[in-house]
Image 1: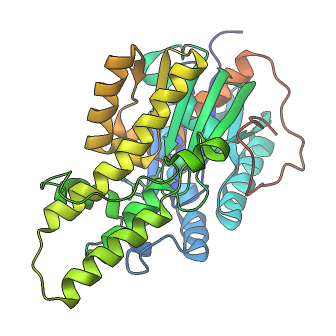
Image 2: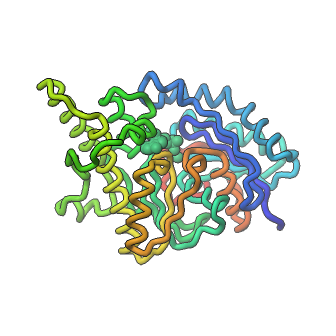
Image 3: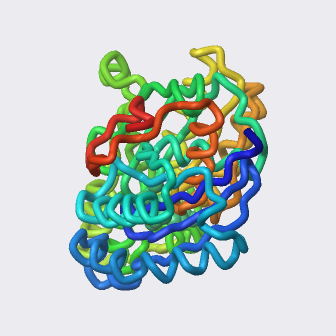
Length: 346
Ligand code: KG4
Ligand code: ZN
C-alpha cells in the first residue's frame, strides 16, 4: 500500500480537532477550542464541552477536508479518539467518526488519546525511535509511558495520584487571581526568583519512592501555594507575584523533569518525548533540555501547537495502525472514558 491517507477526529476534552495525514505528511490540522466558554468556571465543564463539540464538529471536518484538498473517497481510514477523556465529549467524536466511516465506506479505528500524543511527533520529526519514554502533561493527564511500538506496545510506568500537572497550574492561577487557563499565564508571570519559596516536590521523599517511584502528586503543592498566599494576605505582608509564580513553576518542572530523565536512565532508554498542553511551558522545556543533555538523553519536543489536543495526532497514529495492517474497530465501537495507555486500538 502507498502511504495511508487517514482522517483523525479528536474530541476528548475541550478541543474539537480534525487532522488529515498521508503517512507522516500533515495535510490538515483544524482545531476549534471551547476554552473561552469554560473560562468563567475556572476549568472544563463537561456538558458545555459536549455541546461545543456538537456545534463545531461538521464545520471543523469541512475545513480540514478543504485544507487537505482531498475527496473523502480517497481516504484509507477514519480514526477517532475512543478514550480516555470526558465521556460525553468522546461520544460526539465517536458518533461523528462512525457516521463518516459509514457514509464514505471506510474502515473505522477507535484509538487511544495518549498514544496519539506520542504519535504526533512523527509528523514533526519522522520515525519515533523506540524504545522511548514519553512524558504527557496536560490539564487532563500526567503520564510517564514506556513506548516500545507506537501502534502496539505502550506501558504506563507512572501517573498522577491526584491532580494533573495542568490542573495544578489552573488551580494555582485561580489562587493568584489570574485567568483560566492558568498555564500560559503563570508561565508569563514567572519572572521572579524560582528559589525564593521552597514549595514541596510531591512524591520525591524517600518514604514515597518505594511505592510511587514514577508517580506524581500536585495537590499538596497547590495547597501549599494557597496557604502561603493566604498567610501573607492575612498578615498584610507584601509579596511579589513573580516570585510565587516562578517558585511554583520550578516545583512542578523540577519533579516532572527529574522523574522523566531518571526513568530514561534507569530503563536504559536514550529517547524522551513530551506532549500535552504543559509541554508548551518554557521552563519545562529549558530544564528538560538541560537535564537531558547532562544525562545523554535525546529529547523530542513537537511544536507547541501539536502538543495540545488536536486531530492530527489521531490521524498520525491511525496511519501507523493502518501501515501495520492492524484490524479496524467493530461497528459498535463505543467511547471509554478511563482507557489505559496500554490499549492503543479498540
Ligand atoms: O493538552 P491541553 O490543551 O488539553 C488537555 O487538558 O487535554 O492542555 C491544557 C492544559 C491547561 O491546564 C493549561 O493551563 C496547560 O495545559 N498549559 C500550560 C501552558 N500552556 C498550556 N501549562 C504550563 N505552561 C504553559 N505554557
Ligand atoms: Zn491530551
